[in-house]
Image (cartoon, rainbow, N blue to C red; front, side):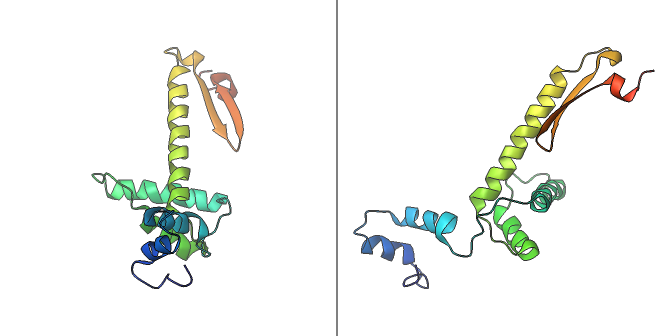
Length: 142
C-alpha cells in the first residue's frame, strides 16, 4: 500500500501484483480493518464506550426516521475527540453487542416482574457483576 496507496485503483493494482490470488475487495477490507497503521487496536476505554452510547442515543433522538446510524461520522468524531482511529467493524460490533445485552436485560426484567408489587425482582448487569434486587432492598412498599 505504500507504493500504490496514492493511486485511485490501488487495491486492483495490489491484487494484480499478487496474480489476483486475493480480490481487490478483500485487500481493501484487510487494509481498512487490520493493516492501516493509523488504526488503534486497543480495547475501548470506558469514556469511549459511554461516548458511543450517548452519541447514538442523541442521533436517534434527533433523527427518529433514520434507518441507519452514520458510523463513519461517529468514527471521525471519536478520532477528533480521543485521537484514536477505530474501524467501522469494531465500533459497530461494540454497539450491537451492547444492544443485545440491553434487550436481554429488558426481557429478563419483564420475566422477573410479577403483578404483586411486593414480589418485584430486578436483575441487571453492572461492571461485570450480576446484581439482583427485590423490593426489600429498597423498602418501597413498607
